[in-house]
Length: 266
Image 1 (cartoon, rainbow, N blue to C red):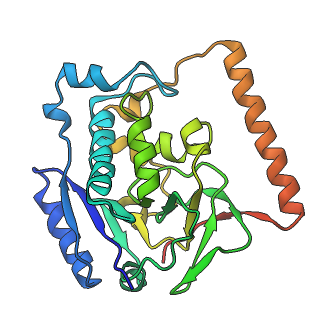
Image 2 (cartoon, rainbow, N blue to C red; image 1 turned 180 degrees about the vertical axis):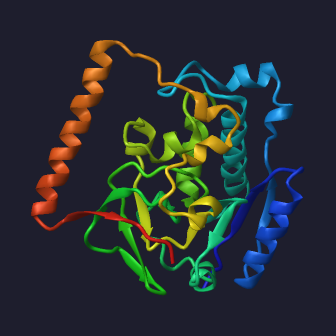
């Protein structure tokens, strides 16, 4: 059995968060590597302009969103440099479920065709396959067929890390939008699985799963953004694409191939 390598994103000035994650992962017997997060306070205008190619779906990215994206890119780069078959990327505000030790002890549950396995939940309804590709410690690994936001805990394979790094030298949207929103062409090109129930959840969601507060709001300025108005034809094309996905899901649900569910945390 091969333990899952863990890359923990943590700001130099967030020592309290690091201490909490050291304790949580220590209880699981899991070693990790700290990846110093890119600090939005130190992000210069030139660095911002080099990576941000213009306004995205939710408008122009904030410095915090850019810094977060660059932090995840550092993890993908490490996976490539170390030639790791896969690794778990964690942000430093997650709570670990009871089966964490078993799941982190081996990567045998990772489907052979997976690019990404999402290991957290935001307690919103998502579309999943009915049949599990694998099962470990009471957790199913099933295909994910809808948007499922947040990027605080996901496993990414070496092949996917290469694709992600190459495709995101310049970007317009936040990292979770690029990875886990079905309107993202990059997301649709990936084979993404969901672990159900999810072994990780962000701290504020763990405290109140019914919270309507958008976790993206913890990135300074993001919660106040308003989606810019797009050309009518662009909006129509997006609405039509979503309608086609909705119809496809309904057909496959009737056929017993898919289901809509809220992924719980355990």
